[in-house]
Image (cartoon, rainbow, N blue to C red; front, top):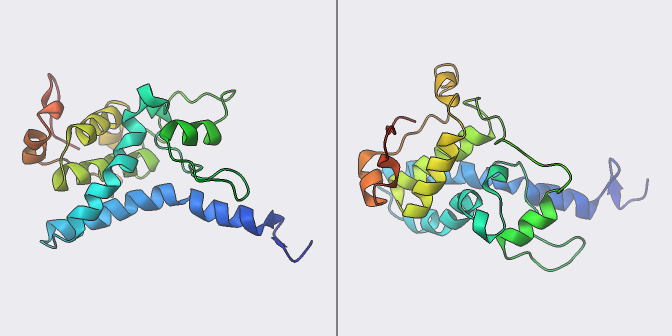
Amino acid sequence: MSPDTVAGLSRAAMWRRRLLAAVQAVLLLVLMLGWIDSMGFRQAKPVLHWMTNFTAGRFTSGTRGYDPIYGTRYFLYVREPGDGPWINTGAGAFRHTFDPNKPVTKLDYPDWGGGYAALARGALATLLNSDPSPQVAAAYDFVREHTSEMTDNYSRDPTFAIAPLARARQAAGNVLAGPGRSMAP
């Protein structure tokens, strides 16, 4: 093994692994900033607003080349291999991250209250509560509709059982208030 490798992985690969894992870290950061905002520290709101497109966009960019069913994947390439340029579109990130020969048909862990889909659902509810918008409401709706069995699991694992407040629904243009929809998590 050369000095440039550790456990068979090049340093660049290890760096990319840390960067790729950042997708879930972003969602956790949204949860923390939302909590901070809810305690009255309004300095968190501009950061939450800035994070909205990355957080919600993965579930609302189907027409722009990012299939929303892939929105809860653990990692996402944001840079070309090696020291290539940064990828600056959702379609580009999608193309570099996912294998078209291995299609995905559901969100990751759609019925587990502690899984990636639950984290995304909680982060989107947090964004709705702090900085509501039609994009976030649509993303929350998408994730909620694809995690219908998760609500039952919240009794065993309520970590991410965060619900949008009624005022968030109204501010987002009532997108969430469609027929048969409640504001429960």
